[in-house]
Image (cartoon, rainbow over all chains, first blue to last red; front, side):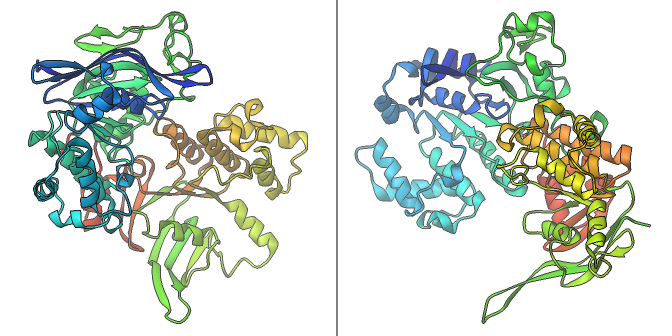
Length: 326
Length: 265
């Protein structure tokens, strides 16, 4: 097995709202290894984006990390990100070691500035002295690597199409060759043919070894299936299943994974044979999560134990699932 | 006889005061829907899907061409209020945005009252009440949890189910469903799709299903029409379209949709 790049141990990250906790991430442990693309899926409100903030240690009020460790493995050293201050993270970690393609990447570019100027601003936060010409050459090379013309950096964001903006943001996010990249719903606002192009660009980042590992966050299993090897399924701030993507598609173990997978309709004969399913009800309010398994109010396989005890992630034929059925 | 026949439908939008500009939103579109058939109209945004729907729903007058519902031209043969009422009983719409179908000042019951009034029934009678409850149960809603609530107290999925409950009251022959699930969470979408299937099976309702989602169209339809830049460029059964697309646009579209059971290349 490859060396780990990022490891989260028993993380709890809560939003503090009027003396109450919203348990957005509750006791989550993940290891992301070198060369791996990990898909993270779940409905809206399952804690996916909060998890990406924990991975970066981008913790701002009202979010706070209550418990747990975030470890980054960098050239043989282990850095505990949760012990660093925001300034240290900004200076030494973000952009260099870890980076993110944010959810609304299309709107991440400053509309009144040329792309070049936005990039130079970013560089100024990382280095005290910058050589403008050198940086521009480097950026232009990277733009061509992600498949857009090098002249794009002299344009304003409104002159670009959605797909071009998205790829420009990808190029900027990976400029310093970060070890670990998070892609948070990078394709959700694009039409299908642009989606495919952006997906290919992200795949190339790893093949060209610009980044070592990628966490791909999405609600669309069919998209993540094209790019990831491992799938992490989240529900209501918990991980319910971790497994290779092929195994999950062949046989989802957790009832939630099953519901999520079987609600996907793609133009394939298997879908017609399988039929279409849905998960009744809505995700719980994480201020008052249900006792026991958080999925039990919506689960069609509910057992007596499910509302009393909390299932732990356990090994089932080399896969991990948190369910009392196994 | 088909329930809906569309012949050579064209709609040109005009704009500009001095320099007139013309946009051909729908170009010479013809198709028909048989009784109990689900036909999908698939295309990207701006392809003219919604304009077509709005013409069939009589919200928009076509520039040329005709629309026949049950053999009657909806622009020439509907002259009196009674004719219009009859047409509204035959053709019903379910829209994309379940939020804007409600008036937030009134309890949600109002959408069902309006449906009953269309049927010339007094919504306050016991008979109407049991009709309403029956319709709600058919779409998987618990009447006592829904009736008397205001729109903001229901989820998007519940609101859309309630819109479909109207179809169980009115029992139209044709439903025009314009992107009915695109604003619904993926995990609850399947439930709404099943409701349309049930209407078709139990009431033999015909449905024109307008969507940009090829996967949904493939799953639900008997026939798929591909619309591109205002024209229907291709039509066929779902399997024909998926396995041997002819038009460049269709080929590109199908090649770009992420598949679940196969990995690309």
